[in-house]
Image (cartoon, rainbow, N blue to C red; front, side, top):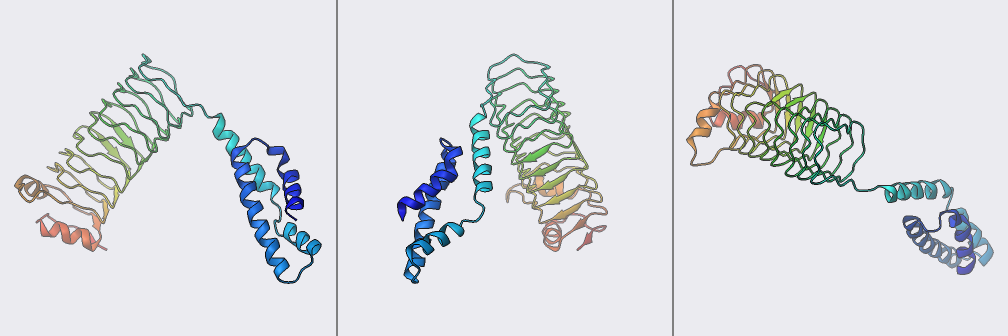
Length: 287
């Protein structure tokens, strides 16, 4: 029986010999079929009937095999882009795909990464002032401790992107959804955020003095120990947002009293936390 099952699978998988993930699928499937065959025999089926029923139980496996093979070959063809220590100011990288690319210690000032897929890439120690990342996929990218002055992030895909400790003077975030993004210990006084959605973003210990977040949405966001003097959340939506300061810092609690929440909508827990530190919530709607 094992030989017949093996011969059958060899025929089905023959076009994909050498593809590692397909070989693993074949091994797993063979083990499952053996178990299925033994179960049918235990129920009284003769050898031939049990074999045919076992094979029939697979269904249309060829489409699945082809998809697994195509994906595996695609991944194998991917080459890691390494442009570390390169002098490439004002370069055109618009629309490129560079997963886990290395752009470390490079001169990239004014370069265009519009609509590029840079998933998992690192720009550590690079000069990316005036760079354009509009529409770029920056999922899992490391952009921490960089000079990103005047960089543009219009409609960028920002998921788990790390901007911590970077210089963002004049940087613009327009129409972007920031998900689980790190913006800790960052000077954001001169950065611009417009029409953005913040989900799980961490602003801990960052300087947001004078920032205007009017009309934007904040879900699960941390503003703990942040500089919040004269920050505006007019008409913003805040849900499960944290505003915690150091027990020994009066500066943080004084700053909270200068924050404008006029017209904001917030959940009961956020409201209660802010009320407890004497924020002005006289024009807030609680939902």
